[in-house]
Length: 444
Image (cartoon, rainbow, N blue to C red):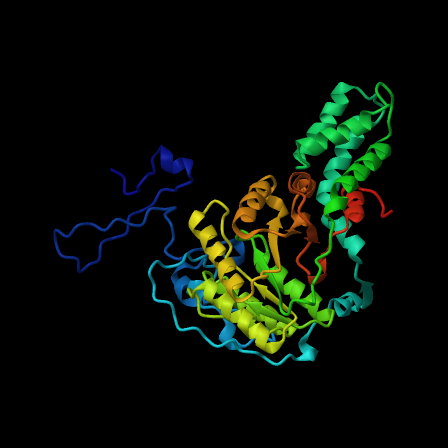
């Protein structure tokens, strides 16, 4: 047999060459097994190439990688460190504990109002944002309203343009228009009335999309005008008690903060009661709003009795001569009988101290829930006697017609609407502006 170790076909395919085996060491003991040489083409013990070529250095990887430094976010200047929420409670949505011993009530802390800390709505509107060295003027309410309703108005305008461009008015066209309005949550009754108004006297004739939008705006304004009522603060009641209710996520606590800021800008004194004692984050959130607006906040530890806190807050507001007391409540689903009963208890306890209170019960509704808002109004009216509505998050849906459906079914006053997160994105409701914005028309 030759001394040359010839490769087989597989080795020749990969370019192996014949090799001569190394001689065994002279001092190797007799009978020791022969050591085979490394086969040509085997994986090298050290990786070849450079890191830029994509070859990692596995040996040094564990030692060379350093942990990323933590990102530290400082608290806002007006927020004390004591208001930081522990990680284990962040985002918690806690249920009340049955038969738990209620903690001792805390005396309400009446904080002095720092006028410099109060951010008035007028000051925010007058401020200018600087971008790239140029001053950019903030949009007025009409601009924010049309921007917030853009998703709904664009969806409707696209359907209207497609339906009525170079096409005669017939039964099929009107039915498609009605379907588009129902999809935008206008409700069957309102959608049918608008379709009938569009077809009246125009059957088998052409009609321009702009004319359809004008009819739409007119019918929406007619439906909403009776419910577009301002929230009237009766100075004969001091404090004027406003109970804020709604489901989790509707923006209830944020709405309280925005309203407090508007009332403070009007020169009224305001006190807030952190009645959402089931969720620690809601208590801390309301305290921050109190600091921003210069409004004292009555609060107890998480898990405290909400009705007892409301009673204490009303007493404290009386003693301080406060104009307006706004009471937050725990977010609750309208189909949870136990939680709705607890809301009824809050109302009963307030009434014992002040028979005419609460003077206003505002239900905060999230526009993105669509038709579910109808059942919310129905059941909250039974439990707490809703006196008015606040519709938020109209900028987050293409189905802003739900406000029209609510007006047609319940006729409850709509006091405020919200089209964004900013403090100036919550404004008193005006039927004409809303109707023209949702129809995609200019302000008339």
